[in-house]
Length: 399
Ligand code: ATP
Ligand code: MG
Image (cartoon, rainbow, N blue to C red; front, top):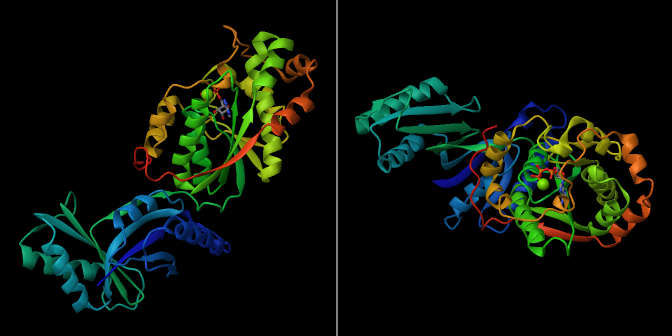
């Protein structure tokens, strides 16, 4: 008997000619993800990905990491034997004797046709085998134990549970985007959504040090460590924003400050995006959530951009966003107190219906190009690695 993990693809199965590309991205990602952990091999096998384990493989850690791999529908941690009825029954007997249950069902799948019994015949035959040995009741709904069997190309995989994958598309298959990452709840979820669609997400954070604390920057690094569990490593640009804010406060109408902050963030983010060769920007905006996120303000902010801005949370409500934040493990960090630069110098009644012309007039006293250049000159580029050790473990996202 060998211990093996068999990974089933998610949407990749719907792909036509470019399926190979998606498989390559997934295989590469899994190989890097498990790189530091003991495994015998990782390879493609009959439209699946196969991870062979050794006696020393840390199965629990491997499983936890695989739960965060996009492009995976589900996977099984299996005991592998040759696809011969005798071998299968002998291994099933061992599995049954080490499992406590009063009711059970069989879930057999014949993935390739060369085995003489089909899935239904296998279910009946092995169901009778288990019943004979244990006297347990067969139950189709609510069984205490489900014994799974998958037969693929001369190999049989026996398992007790099928683990839900993260869905989506493999990391790196969808191009590169740049996320404007604050320390809040929303933008990490927006970044995660884009990662789930296969994007490699780079990040930019604006800080107003010394008006805001270095702890706020640390918090963003921690958040990105958690988010990087889904893509292993992330680029983070830390950009000083105090000068831009001082100029806006000095020369533009107070009601427009937040919208103007955002327009500058977008411009500076585009300069970062050009450096990183990313094709689009991503923000955590959700329509109407706060004053800066009215339709008019969003339009006015977008008018400062030349690249597409993706807002994957635009139609989500806060409860739904929080649910995802909890599931992906960012929530607990996001709610820790911080000082976002955008909360500085904000009037009691910010504009909720800005228009691009008004914003341009307000910016006419500012040297836009110079401010963007200066911010870029002070920017620092960092690489943040996946933090597998710290923070709550993600549960399965349910959206
Ligand atoms: P979040 O929870 O993501 O902070 P929010 O509800 O607090 O969102 P805003 O503060 O209005 O909303 O920010 C809207 C979006 O602008 C954020 O989701 C983020 O993409 C971007 N943003 C805001 N502040 C910053 C910052 N300091 N650095 C980078 N991006 C930011
Ligand atoms: Mg915020």
